[in-house]
Image (cartoon, rainbow, N blue to C red; front, side, top):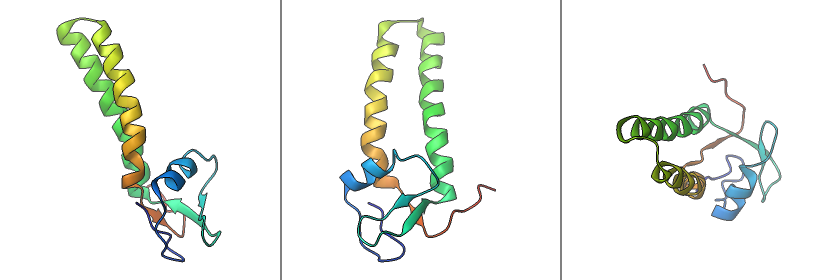
Length: 99
């Protein structure tokens, strides 16, 4: 679970999950109220993972033909990614450039 870089308190899974769906540049710490940002590494990782999952499902369709199994695999993997994602969130005090 991520820790606030200002007050160093660890966020719970529920707090991290809820704040990961906020729009805007950052997430507010539930303890000190300071704005926290995802690290550049985390933002890159969170954009690559859905593409990998999609590519794997398309490759399975290419080799085995389209089927309902690929649809069910997609529907099973997406919630799993959402459940696991808060464990890998990394925060920083400043918004970091991607490059």
